[in-house]
Each structure stands twice: as structure tokens, then as C-alpha cells.
Image (cartoon, rainbow, N blue to C red; front, side, top):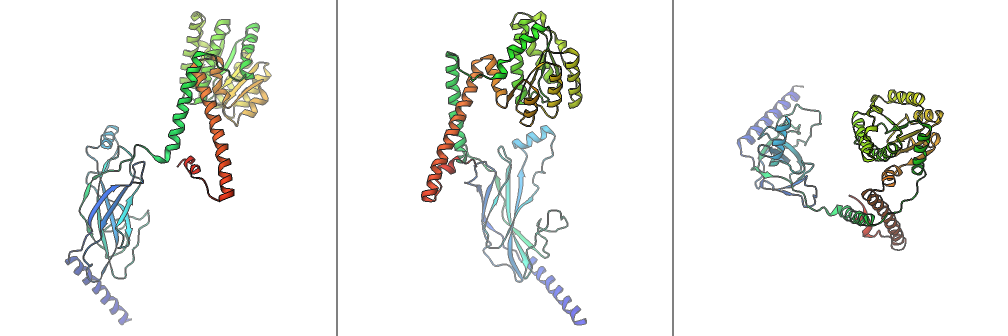
Length: 437
């Protein structure tokens, strides 16, 4: 036991002496540090660091184990700093260094810093420190949750020493104006834009054919039935806000319905579950009545906000159906679990029901309980079908032509790739070009 204690004491003294001897000597640091943008980086979020290893040998009893890459942001004067000050955000302290990466191995002389801020990114400063460990010590990295370390962040090895290179900066990554990996997106976007422009020119010169949709053909029938019976129409624009595309499509349909009901002096009821949707609905109906020369017949009290609670709103709409007995119910927009409750109550009241939604989970309920149902993209086509507006028609035709071309390209590419794989076993290069990276 005494010998064991003595040996441990001698080893500790030797380590202390070696550490003090190493500290007395000047540790060799890396030289020739350069920081450039990554040529393979298209987004501008990475930098490549290169340096020369220390030219002289490490002190006696120590070995070069790796490098620590230090980084700090040149925050003052940058666009990001000005934005952060205006927004009241916390920004890094100017001149505060942090560890960007750990590079194990003394023979390594290159590192890549990734996932930096994209443009306009702040400027960065870098410095590389050579890490020297006592002979026989292992390179040990701390876990993400450990904080009781000394010296270079992320290293838990005792007795380590470091020598830092000169500071390089300010530098920042720069992305490319054209990303070749997105060439397929650029080509298809340009082609689709050209198709829409040509379709718009054609739509302004002559009427364009649109496939008949049974649900939209029944709109005039529903309005006529309500006029003959002297009952109102009920319009429900879904349970999403004005930012949802289904709600926007529903507003286009509402404009057409409002012009027709204004001409026939048929009231239209529109309970809303969103205040913004209510304001827009009132404005659309008011303009529709003004267009047909009947602004005095506009009744804003028929368009009102009920509640933003889902089933409370549904209960209120069901009560309107049973009290007012509307002759036709229109469900246009995005719906959730309340779709069957609305449609079943309207079916029991004896009203003609026309539904349109892009919520595929609710389509079975509308198909079961409603007289007509517009499925998926038919909701978006309804505005162009009813209004015959050239811009809407051009967009609709452009989408159809674009989808047809994409389908044709997929069929042709699949056939060519299949033949190439079967007979040569190689995948054609154009298949990789079609893949979005």
C-alpha cells in the first residue's frame, strides 16, 4: 500500500512538473488560417476553414491531439444587429468568442462550419487553437448537458493546453444567385407562367370551355326555388380564416350568389365564426347589391358573427336552419367534424344543399347528406365557372394544361427510365435532374 501511494504521488508530481514545463515553453500555434465560402454551398450557410499545422514539435510530455475552432459574430453595424435592436431581441455580446467546432486529430488541417445564418448574415471572425494533451491522455468531449468544464469548451480532458492562431475576419458566407439543383423548378415555373399568359390572352378574345359541373349548374335552380318559396338562402363559408385558400374560393362563389339573389330580391343569410370573414362577407354582398342597382335592398343584419367556438357555432347554424327554414343551403370552404351535423340538419329541413370543400376527410359526409358536392379542386374552379372572369379562366386553364404536361412528362420519363434500366442497368441522367434536391 505504501509503495502504491508513493507511486501515485510521484506520478502526480511528474504531471505537475510536465505541465509547468509546458506552460513555461511557448506552445506552437497553427498558421496560415484562411476562411472562404464553400463552393458547393448554394444557400450561403457554410464556410470552409483551412490552416497549416504547427511547424515545431510539441513540448516534452505533450502531443497534438486536435484543434478547437473559435468563432464570434461582428454584430455591431450589421443588418441583423439593426433588426434585433428594433425588435428588442437579445444579440451576442460583441467580441465574445464561442466554440464553433472541435476537430480531433493533429493531422487535420481543414474544417467546415455549416448551418450559419442565411443572407443577410452577420460577419464572423475565426481563430483556430491547437490542443495539446499530456502523453497518454484521451480526447474526451463533453455531453450537451454538461457545463463544468475548463479550458476549451467541449473538452473534458485534464491537463490540456492550447495555442491559438491569429484572428481572421470579418467574413460571411455568400449564396449563389442561381442554384443548379433547383433548375427543374425554374424551368417548370417559367413554362407555367408562359402557359398562363397565353391562356389569359386567349380568354380575353373568346369564351373558354369549362367542363360542366353538376353542383354549379344547380345553383340557379336553388336560387329560383328559394325565390318561388319566398325563403332565404343560407351560406356557410367554413371554419377557417381569410388566410385559407378554401375560404378565398368560397368568397368568389358568394359574390356570384349575392348578385343573383340581389336581382331576385331573395335574402341571403351568412352566419360567420370569424370576425374578419364577417367583414369581408358584408363587403362582398354590399358590392354585389350595388352592381345590380339594388343597394337599398342590402341588409347587413343578415350577415353576422356568431362565435369562434366550433360546436357552439354549429349549434347556432342548426337553429337558424330549423327556425328560418332556408330553401337552399350552401356549404363552401374548409370543414371539420361539424360537416355531418350541418348537412344532416339541413337535409331534415328539406332544403336543397350544395357543398364544396377541399377537406378530403369530410367529403363522404357531404356526399351522403347533400344533393350536390364539389370535390377538391372543383371548389377552386367554381369561381371561374360562375363568374366567367378572363383572369380566373386563364388561371384555371393554365393549371389544367400544366397538370397535363406534367402527367405526360412523368409517363414518358418513366417509360424511358424503365427501358434504360432493363436493357443497360443504368439510370438516365435526366431522371436525377427531375429530382428536387
